[in-house]
Length: 433
Ligand SMILES: Cc1cc2nc3c(=O)[nH]c(=O)nc-3n(C[C@H](O)[C@H](O)[C@H](O)COP(=O)(O)O)c2cc1C
Ligand code: SF4
Image 1 (cartoon, helix red, strand yellow):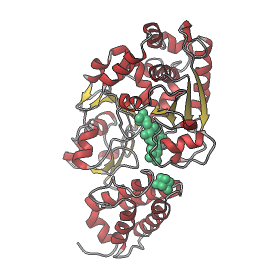
Image 2: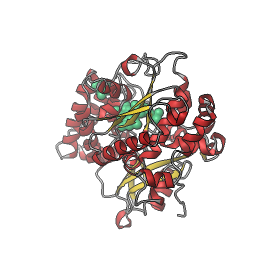
Image 3: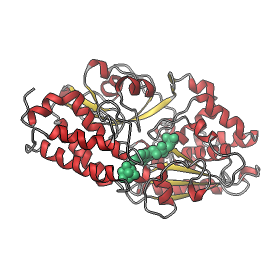
């Protein structure tokens, strides 16, 4: 297994582990060079074009093309805002935290480039409240960037003004969903909005708003430096470039690995993460954060490429937030499904009935199934409740009766149990195969 990391966004933090987050460390390894050049060239449209050519897709979960999202901003309407999604609440995702803590200047430079490209003079970072060190380092980085003239009024004599405000979240997973995040920033309860209008048209304070993930923005200086076409040569098909994958669970070396898209799950799990503890077999893995459906330890699944469209179209799973949770052959899939359901039931904001009620019922039914109290009719009951959240639960998991995708996320586990572990689950509730 000879795959190696392809470090672009994580290069600096690995090269200068002693001081990568400080202004001196960052400047010594090239920070703000691209930002200077962007301002010198003075052409926001050219930046947008490089991002379009790069094929960059959002790293926050949905994989939406970044340049296309920016293009939805209505012409001539100002002010407009950039909101940085640093909430990172998806269970087992821990890449944004690393980027904020260990290379905050790269993020600030990415924010500056994006703001310039879209014509924003005030950006907001919504940072997960628990990231105490990240908050300290990011606010210091913003202060240092300001005192070096990279932010503030008339940045580097260009006539462009930009400031960045950091807001700390208070621990609700739903506040990572972009419209709930906007509500929360406005001081309201973090509950998703019904769309349309989309944030690009009516977002923060009812102004045109772009919401982008920390990793997405941290990639921008490199795209502009390399050129969009060069960046697009990395990766595979419409999954261009590199991504950071947070690998966790029963692997020998859990951690964040930045790889070129197109390498396989096997490369990640057995190559970079060192294989399974005690050299056991993989029973199943969750390829893209807790909201995704699962894959198994079969050769076919392990050899699938990290290609957002391929895994979606072939297996109905997503690369999502880049969190790969690996479970060995000692794992009880019912317990995992129950634990995930417990999380979603706890985090449901309660705005829509199918999610508010359904996540709770699913959690209770899975609990009894996983703890030896299951009933023969339980699997059908799960499908029935799941079908009210995500109609066509088994074959069309991305339909939804809810305002946001949190509700349907709980159904991903049920669909996976049905697809791969039906016999095992049936046997547990007293139904013979
Ligand atoms: C329940 C839920 C939680 C989410 N949590 C996050 C999060 O913590 N961080 C994030 O970047 N995106 C999260 N997203 C996705 C955001 O809504 C949004 O798509 C993303 O921030 C856009 O940035 P990108 O285009 O750069 O990926 C979440 C979505 C949902 C439905
Ligand atoms: S699906 Fe759940 S989390 Fe999303 S808006 Fe509805 S109740 Fe809230």
